[in-house]
Image 1 (spheres, rainbow, N blue to C red):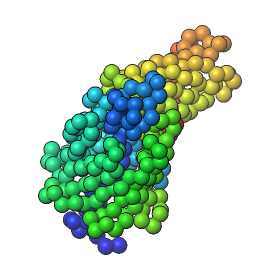
Image 2 (cartoon, rainbow, N blue to C red):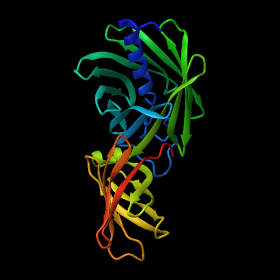
Image 3 (tube, rainbow, N blue to C red):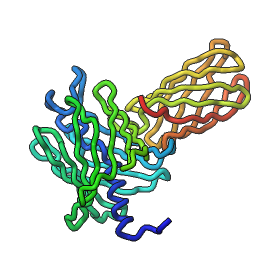
Image 4 (cartoon, rainbow, N blue to C red):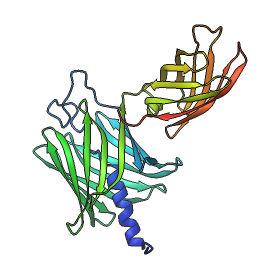
Length: 300
């Protein structure tokens, strides 16, 4: 295999940026019922969007979007080790996105994205380097009010891939990226939330197993404010019992619950890192201990 030169590395980086930022048009006109996402009666602009990028089932990177007045204002992307990859700043005018400027982890601007509109919908997204040279573009096709696919072109108008979008309850929840030969290369999963703090990054459904002096399975749902609730099933006692607790901004998870035959709760203490959960549990009354593991459930 030929080693990529510096120019190809730059192009690959920009293509990665293009893919990481597939969903540029979520909530673009959220104050208007004629916007790009049909508005349910309870619809409100989201305070954040979390993207998780998967290749062959493994998490490769993830991005966290911040919103101001229903419009994206900033995106921060990290690799799977939690290291900053890049961040972007949006400009909005007349309720439309204009550009998003991208910076590396050293705060150096290396490119920007420009949004092209047709009939008040984003029809094209163009990616430029820091010298205003076109790197790539994507042409967006809508199915009614929803964007359905996007075809990706290089700066010579050669097709390099496409993106297929999947929706659920008026919200985009997955985007699949295919290369020019129609091979699935990676997928992005989306989570949304109305948050008052950084705890919202942990929103979603989780499940896993616990073992030790007892063994079983557990499920948890974490809301935008870090409140956790769910159930555990004990194989030893053959009983399902409720769990409740919370997660901190740092990802520290504390939940507890008890089976009907128990005296005293079982306490689960762990941490969430990149959607993976691990920790220890203890039941003081019976002096039982063990460990638990799990992960965030992908998709809706």
